[in-house]
Image (cartoon, rainbow, N blue to C red; front, side, top):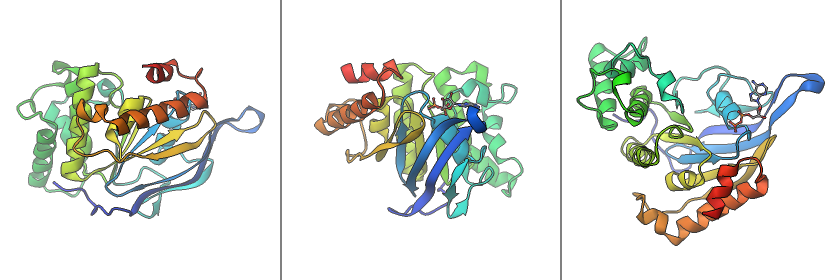
Length: 278
Ligand code: ADP
């Protein structure tokens, strides 16, 4: 299975140009995003990290075409996003609500392919390859409720992969699983990304995770948000949960991100203070 676009080192796949968003109108309007401009290149892994309330969910809703921004534009592969764009898939934090409990693992994964142009044989192959990519071969006939939380999130990832997305949006996808499962899922996503050359935009409030996974980290300011900083992550690949996190470059980068967020507003999210202190 390959991604639907050839990766190019500096081809902007996603362009977020001067995007702002306010909820409501008039004197009661609430400005969630001030002005955000950034790009994601084909084949890149970009993390967005920011305190709670920084507008991360609002931004993802706009990128996914679920909501129009009140200013600015988003383009994917050169086309302005003004409704749910083809080629975008999303993995949410809440896997239990994103999977259909009455469908088996195989049918949940196949669900993303309903109504497309694939032949039944191609569809079967995509489902099998996606299930293999997340290490769930042998579990195709089980139901989501028969699986652990980490396995359910792997089903949700397989479903997104079967769709062969141009851009995969991940919204705090591992925030609801335990630390060990989380580390395994992080490495799984990195392996999938290398093998399938998927472009990923990954939203998290976890400083370590944002650095460990990404080629580039965007740090959002407090609301109304802007991009407070953009950091390149020149850490060697493949990454390793222990060896990478011992590297001086990793330690320096995580401190830099944590400090940036603390400067944004330490009172906004105490979890981020812990990241600085630890
Ligand atoms: P994050 O995901 O970073 O926690 P959100 O995008 O959920 O941030 O929220 C950004 C800001 O916009 C917050 O102040 C939040 O209260 C506000 N907000 C989010 N959704 C709505 C909505 N539907 N109506 C009004 N305000 C909203």
